[in-house]
Length: 140
Image (tube, rainbow, N blue to C red; front, side):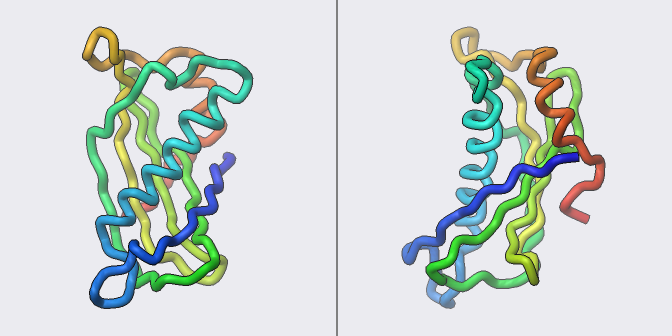
């Protein structure tokens, strides 16, 4: 099982009044990693996979420890924990080699933007996702 690795820069504006990365900002970090995984990595061979759109149906986040601003990026590991006919669940760990800051998961639904409705996962998308499938969720 492979994991998608995303190096996420921290921005000065990500901090809150308590001097650590604000909880809402972590959703943006997860979005950046998810977009990198689904929309940059999948279509790497000219594939139209996921290019038609997708929507987030659910987020679940466990904040393990505070992350303070620094110049070094944080690593976000992503993998797939579930694939159904019309959705997938992506798990994440926002971490450094020695510690985890956040464990999270997102349910994503492929979406047909032209028809404004959910659609099924294609065979090509399922084939791509299965390389990253590990049924151990990040959130306990």
